[in-house]
Image 1: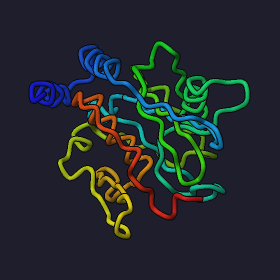
Image 2 (image 1 turned 45 degrees about the vertical axis):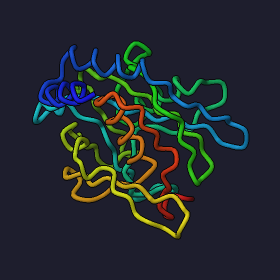
Image 3 (image 1 turned 45 degrees about the horizontal axis):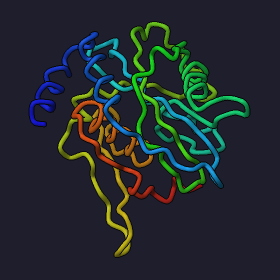
Length: 220
């Protein structure tokens, strides 16, 4: 397993077909947990892998929601949203990527998926990992996205991730991740899914994250 970690670390400086192949292979070996949807609303998010247009580094696309939104205003998030009637979670993830940040990706760009995550607000989130070869087409919708950030793999590889915040005795801890690009912490569920992507996609470790608690501001 140490060889896998070293191989992933070497790939952090290049965004190419070898990185795509490595991440795809690790995700294919991973057996993602899919939850029963009974009583939960369905949602899908996309962990979009892209090359930072300024630094050239392999990165994950993260957005910040406008402060004018009714739900989760001003929070950092992965592109995504509810699964509409008549569509699959895969279709929803691709649709949300196009609607929120203007990228037209297809099924062939999906490298794999991670574990479903049940939120305190009553959603079952299905995370998909997507490969984006060209961010020149990026066109965020200002109604849904206030800003777009490219979080380099090197930041996700930090040994300080995950940071756990204790609650009452016997309860699962709240999980967060400090990202220097943002200058502060992000929290589960977004932080949990990014952490699992690091573990599975970059390190080849079958790490589970569904047990991590979310902060109270994410419960609504």
